[in-house]
Length: 109
Image (cartoon, rainbow, N blue to C red; front, top):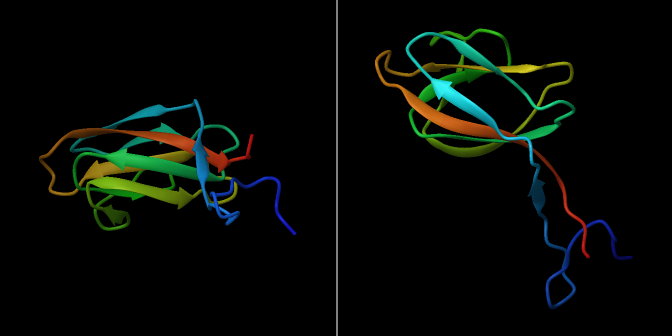
């Protein structure tokens, strides 16, 4: 049975897709730890950052306890109860920018 909550291609195959929400948050990456508030209620987020850095679902991060995030775009699952995503420059001297927004499933019109 077809799932009415997912879009379909011309051959009636389900297209696995997510929708960008209108809740973008600017991310500034620097040489010291900073954190940005995750959009309220987000279970999935899309982040894009233009410089290598370390990230962590927390209020602070260091290069020893963060997860390496190479510049680019990624979709991440937000752990239950987490409200912030922290970042710090990977090399200690670079700065950069990015965005974060929540994602939700799409629905065929």
